Image (cartoon, rainbow, N blue to C red; front, side):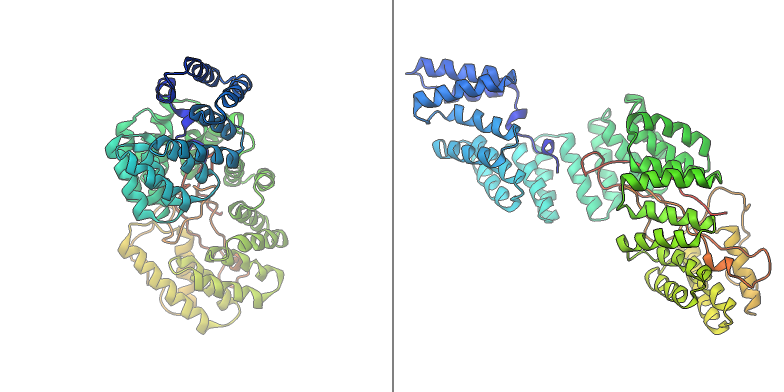
Length: 513
């Protein structure tokens, strides 16, 4: 977590520092009082060299026992990155004044910055005994417990901090706990309360918009993202998220216009170039798509989602060896995603049928919700003459489709329906066993959403959807094409640029043609 997330002594207003200086003064030594005032003056002016010179003189006169001089010296060391030295000085202050909660808070702060979260919680608890009404202590204890993965204790302390004093940062940390636990609805409730408290905070508005985007509530997502852009028209995170929504609905030209604005603010953003590449993919400009995706891959070589998209575009261009290269790399980073193994079945086109079957078998094992995996596997087995195996996969596909129809109002891709009907007829199991409802216009921009886990970029978006490599290796009647399902957009746990974050950049869902 970035340092600014834990309020430090450097963030205390000048009046508070002055009050602390008055607490440290020695009435019988007016010169020392003047020196403390001078130290404070140089510090708040950020004239650290002059401040250190006065501190050195002060410590020489007091034989190293001036608590305020040591305290400010420790703050300067921390600002310079000398965390261990600052810790030792703050510990000296705590020894000189053991009943001062501020000294213990700074000791705990330094321990936190050194990654010693458990030790930091112990010191914060000691500080809480001296001052039970300090929201900063409760907040920082909650943050430490987040790093220790003790989410229940973290929530208790963060709620205590909100009762003492409401702050945007405390709401953000509470929301992140729910996101780490995978509870999007509770996270939304927290962010809604935060927006009520601070309606002009663009980070809160953008994150709330992205959460609604992940749930598919596009109206509310657009509303909150629009509010964020109203307060900050240059907020690139909100612009990128809004562009991804337009991209999701097939408005590629409008989305590209939005991305041009983002490119001026963050020209080296991997999610930005990923989204631009997939816009070109939607416009069937495959060479431009590969160029943009490779730039994204250069900026983020370990992002499996960019590798996924590169494999998808190469499959579309029938460059199967290149597709295999990128998909294999993606699997190394994300070995539990069944859809990657389904795409890896491009081995079919590389005349490696056995490994293609193994890839499909692994995809079926990992993906328990997406009927497209079973359908493509059934097509491959049918083309190889293994009708019994094809029938088994077809029946599994039927079960998944029925489950999706019973538990959600999803629209199935027309190509998937057509393929399943032709395969059912070929297997002599009926032509429309699983689809009893009419299918909508095949040109519709809205596609079926998989019940599986969405793919995320940076932390927030779904990428191009899978194409059926088995369909290209077909013996079915002409016109049968690979079926496809779309996945919902996803979202980052925390906004960029900290690891957090970061951000809030979502890319549109793409469909294969």
